[in-house]
Structure formats: structure tokens, C-alpha cells
Length: 400
Image (cartoon, rainbow, N blue to C red):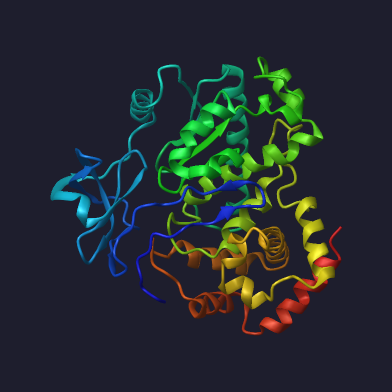
């Protein structure tokens, strides 16, 4: 393992038009990784100066660079990368680190957001919205169904998950224009082509009211649950809703212990897993009756690439992420990532869970070099990559 601390550009879901927010700040490459897995950790008080303003942050130390830069986790679930140059002072505090309660976080969010925002609380989510209450309730119901399905799916297969330690936050804007204005601070010019995203930094989902999307014939914000379901149950809405579910799956993965924010997780795993869950069952009030069903869009892309001979080798897919970040190769890379996750979960579920546990044990911001990635994969799925690749290709030819 190449122990370098990094703040890099993380996976951009170019194919679905959704991306993780990019972490803009940087720390030095050499770093000491704090005991991030220990939840009851003392608070650190860090005074910083940013944009000419002095601010004191209180949180748990996640990562410390050798030059004094740190990454701090605050009680609202936000990760703060703080380069040495911004830090004025640091002070240890004996108080234990405790996340904000849902009520306390709701109060903080109400103070942060524009005055026209309201908060809809569900069992696990705070839906912050300035659109219709009916749409906020629809989003809350969709996310809660996904939440139940996600935990049921993994726990029944032996994965050890924990409940989210922070209330899960979703920001829902009333229009694409208001969403773009907010998202531009995190996504830059990409915001205009992205309908929703999960931010590794803030731990929040951000999206807008999809019933106003012209292509769906919504003609404006839905005003009732029946109207919302009518619009978003259309075949043309499936990919739009799937995008939101895809990003909400990332939020669950990073808040359940399945994955660690800013750990160097191979993109084929993080994106392929989200694609595996993304297709919603909008007609079922009970949620996803068909988790892991065939993702038709990606199956088509996979087979087109197989016919053209443009699929990456299994070794290339496992050890490198470049093809996911290149718009010319991203559709094939995402399709192949879905296919590999589909194949492994259908044929080697126990080994896949073991592999996820290795990923969950990784520290944030520590680069894992290609050799270590391959070692981890072979540790779980066996040494003979050629045989596995042949079986993978054969299996995908049989999928209907």
C-alpha cells in the first residue's frame, strides 16, 4: 500500500450525469492517519482563517498531515480538510465526540438555508426543501424504502452494517435554476448537467424537484402524491429517478459502514454497487422487489462494447480508474462495472462480502496502489484471474 494522503478528484458518474463533489483543498502528501474507526473520540478545537474570516471548528480528528494540516469531522457529519496555512491554533478538548441529534441538526440546517426552506423529518432523513410538501414527502418515502431495502439486502448476506451515525440529509430545491446556483459552489460548471449528487465532504444529497423536468411532461412542481407518482412512473422518468436512487445508495454505503468516505475504493466497486441498486420500483409501496435485477441500459452498453472488443481487461478494470473519468470510455467502464458486480454478487456472494469488508477497513485519503488492489481482489476471489475472466464473460452472455 502506498501510504500517501491525497485530496483527489473522486469518481464522476459521467454516464448518468451525476458526480461526487470534488474536494478542492489539499494537504501534503505525507500524513498520519488518525484512529478514524474509533467512534467515541475526543473533540479537537481548531481555529482557522478562511476568506479573511476567523472561525473555530469543534470536531473529531480524522487525518493529520505531517506538516500540521488536518481533516476534521464535525458533529453535523461534515468533513473539513484544513491545510496548515489556514490553521491559526489547535486545542484538545476532553469532551467526547457526539453527532448532532436530528432535532439539533434540523435547527442548524434551518439557520444555514434560505428562509423559504422547510424540513420534513422521516425516521432516518431530514428532507430540506423549498418545493411542495407533497414532493418532499415523496422523496422521504422513496429514500426510506431504499434504506430498508439496502439494510435488508446486505444483512441477509452477512455484511456487518451499523445504523447511520448522523441524520441523513437531503436538500431538495424547487427548480433547476435554484439548484444550479447552490450546486455550482461544489461542482463548478458541471452543475448545469447534473440533476443530483451526494457530497463526500458534506455527507448530504442535493437534488431538485424532478416533476418540473420538461422531458417528463410534468409542466411544473407536482402538487399531490397522485400527480407526482403519475409523472415519475412514466417510462421516460426511470433513468431520472434511478440517478437520484444511485446517489442515495452512495449516501447509504458511506453511512452504514459498508464504505468509508475518502477511502481509496476502486471505482468499479463504488459505482457498480450503486448501479446495482439504482433502478427503482416506483409501483411498489413496499420498495424494491427486484434488487439486483438486470440493468437493461448497462447490459446493452456492455454487450455493444463486447461485440466491438472495447471492454477493458479484468486486470485493468480492477487496478485503475482512468476509464471512468474519460467521457469517451466512461459509458463502457460503468457498464462493465455493473456487470462485474452483478456477476460476483450472483455467483460469489460470500467472497464479495469479504472483499467489501477489506474496503471498509481502509483509512481515508490513503492511496492504494494497483498491486495492492490486485492483492486484495485475489485474496477474496482467487489467484486465477484468467479463469475468472473467462467465467465472467460466459456468464454475461447468458444474462437476459
